[in-house]
Length: 209
Image: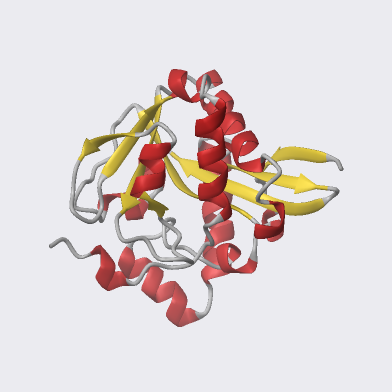
């Protein structure tokens, strides 16, 4: 079995699962996302977003392949490139951090260590680029098929809460910690990614309480 990780580019963007390929939950603000959905063009908006980030900032994600088949991915970018990042009650993301938008390992590959590979590769990439930390908006009462990350699992893999909230806490992982995770933490991460699937969170779910 051969495994490899590559940066997400316009050439391999279609290797993302269809539900992620056509989802612009993170890439557009709520109004822009609704317009893209109404126009039936979310996939074009996704492509435009990836193109813009690649040109202006650089690599914004990783795809894992097993024997040539897409098996998992992670998407991340600085907060200025993620319009949805300002829509949360625990915004904004810290200026020295990159936002982990979403990640997923396909179920059939969930026991192969791909989750560990994806996040360690992301951490090494960001460290080389001078980034200090990764942040993410967690969600309590997480539901399957949501594109957000469960808060409990983020805590389990080493993230720390920097701004608590009963629904959408913001969490942070220092990259020096990410590069030295213990094996049990890596296993927890792998389980997290294997349980996730990319899908849109209803707009009403992002209304501050």
